Image (cartoon, rainbow, N blue to C red):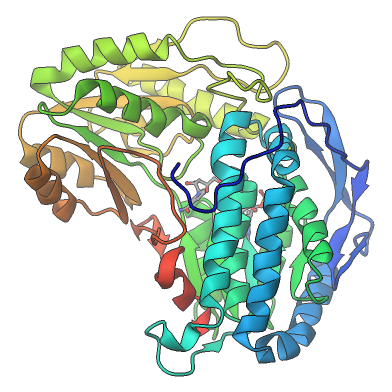
Length: 478
Ligand code: NAP
Ligand code: MG
C-alpha cells in the first residue's frame, strides 16, 4: 500500500485467537457485567457458531460510562498534547504488535476476508493512531486558532462493516484533541473493540478516558441521548442518522453523521479497460459490498459497454467466495442474517422491476450467511436497485453517451458520499470530479483510504468530515 506505517505481520499462520465465553462492559478501566445482567450472543457469520456472549448496556450502564468519561476529562484534557501523544503512539504500536490476532478476530466476527482485515483494516487502524498522535501537540498550529479546546465527552456509535477501523476513525482524533470517549460498537461485531479496550489497558491509558459499552440499538440511543454527552459522532444508516438528528436538535450537542451511500463509478471510453474492470470489482466486492462508499452504480460509456461487461464477467468468474480465514478468499460472508435478507429483498425487487440479473454460479457454504457476486443490467434511474443502498455484493449497470449525461446520472441520487472516474485524460477527470456532488472522488482507483484525507458526505450521506486535519475540527471547540 506504500503506507509508511506498514508493519510486517507475523508469519502466516492460522493464528489462534482467545475469545472469552463472555465479555463485560469496559467502564473506567475495568470490565463489568451490565447492571441488569443483560447479554447478547455474537456469532461467526461464516458458520453461525456462537463466538461469545456480550453484555448489553442499559441506561444505568451508559450513565456510569459517561460519568467515568466526565471524571477522566479533567486530567486528560489538562495533559500537555505531547503527553497524550505518547499514549496514542503506544496504542498504535500495540495494534501493530497484535495485528495478526486483531485481523483474525475481525474476520471471525465480521465475515470479511482475512486478506482485507490483515492488509487494509488493521494497518489503517494503526496508521490512524500514528497520524492523530502526531497532531496532539500541534493543535495550536492546526489552523483552528491559537488555543483550541477539546469539547468534552464524546458519545460514538459505529456500524459493523469496519468494526475496528470505524473505532479508530472516531477514537484517535477524539483522544488526540483531549476529549474522553464512550463508544458503542455494533451488536454483531463487538469483539475487536473489546480487544482494543485491553490494548488500551496495556498501553496504560488512564481509566475512564475510553469506555466501551456494548449492546444493541437501544444502547446507542441511550448513549447519544445522555445529557452529559457533549459531542455525538455516528456512523450508520441514513434512517437512524435522521432519527439522531431529530433527537438532538435544540440541545447543545455537537454532531457529525456519516451515513449511507450509492456511489457512481464512471468509466469513460478512453479508460484503460483492464484497470477499470479491476476498479469496478474492487469498488463493489471489497468487503462484500458492505461499504458505505462502495461503487455500487457502474456508469459505463455506451461505446465500450460491451467490452467492459465482457471483461467484467470474466473477471468476476475468477472470484473466490468462501471461508473468510482462507487467504485466497475474495468475497467473505454477509455480516448477519438480517443484512442477508435485506440484500435478498432488494435483489428480488430488482428482478420484479424488470432488470436483468446475473450472479456468479457455484455452491455457497451450507451454513452461514452468503450472497454471490451479482450484476444487474437493463437498469434505469427509476429502479429501486439504482436508488437504494443495497450494502451487499450487488452492482447495477447503466450506460451513458456524453460526460454531461454521466454527471447527471451520477448526481441523481439522494446520497453523495463517494464516486469514481476512469479515464486516461486528466482534464476530463478534473472536469468530472468538479461536477460530482460527492465527498470523495477517486480517479483511476477506488476504495483507497488514508488517515490524512478527509472523508464524509453530501446530502443524505451525512455531514462533517472524519480523517485528516478536518477530522480534528469535529473534536475541538474552535
Ligand atoms: P445502523 O442500523 O444505523 O447501525 C449503526 C449503529 O447505530 C449500530 O451500532 C447500531 O446498533 C446503532 N443504532 C441503531 N439504532 C440506533 C439508535 N436509534 N440510536 C443510536 N444508535 C443506534 O447501520 P448498520 O446496519 O449497522 O450499518 C450499515 C449502514 O451504515 C449503511 O447504511 C452504511 O452506508 C452506513 N455506513 C456509513 C459509513 C460512513 O462513513 N458514511 C461507514 C460505514 C457504514 P446495533 O448494530 O447494535 O443495532
Ligand atoms: Mg459477529
